[in-house]
Length: 402
Image (tube, rainbow, N blue to C red):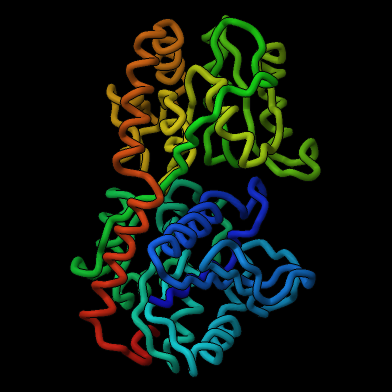
């Protein structure tokens, strides 16, 4: 098949760690490459935010990244991009008029808007993955949610109009049904993860002997890193490494300053370190240097870091929310705790840090679960099956999405 993926703000070429660069970038890149391994031709369309790169950039065998001119060629926060989606969609329609993809897969709601625009004149089978839903974000962030007002009604239309809606977690299905998605269009296909085979703990990360807790990922408030810091006050022999955050101007980042102030206020400066952004090739060694990985978001549509930790054979103490309810099996591969509950988190971390045999048992089960269910080859095969279904059972509709 000729597969077109649209990822308007999350380029698979982007450097991870920034405010708008995270799991979606990894997902789109890895899924595209895995689909190409199955013999498909994949194009990933993303908004041009830099005048430098060529229009078409190879990502790997069978995969090209195509930069779409929609708005100024400079970085723009994703919550300010929706006004450029009609132009993005018109550009896609013009490109696809003569050579239509066999299937189009939109990632995030604004990509869906662009695809809906293109579909008015260039009919194609259409799959939608939201990665995060505006109604969930508003529920948890309230007035701090910076999403534009059109997000929720747009997601409602897309959830109904798409030939297939691919949720990444079971909990998301309930939210989609509440939005009005058709049950027959819903599919659950998780995110995947690299197995990181052959990597060893990175020596430069080791310090101390009281047990290491690791928090890895973007430094935004909803990730709940402050809960992990608060829990460390009850674990006087353990250390915490916090990895992630912007690659540039790290010390000036508002969330970094907030977390550092909390560390100082709790008197934990000798046991809690914020080490900044890490590269992808540093991730497996960093994960394997930890005894336990803490992932404690308020909410999490899926969450790739827990899978990466599991792939490295490390138990995860994770919030019982979103995708973590699927990936982390409580008492088998890790421990679930309520979000924003430092006391329960400290108890779970303390239990694991005190019991090497329990950590080993959970870690082995975690690695086995990832190898069975969450490789990118498995995820690509499941995604391909959804594509086959909508390309063989759905008529080519022009103008359905509105």
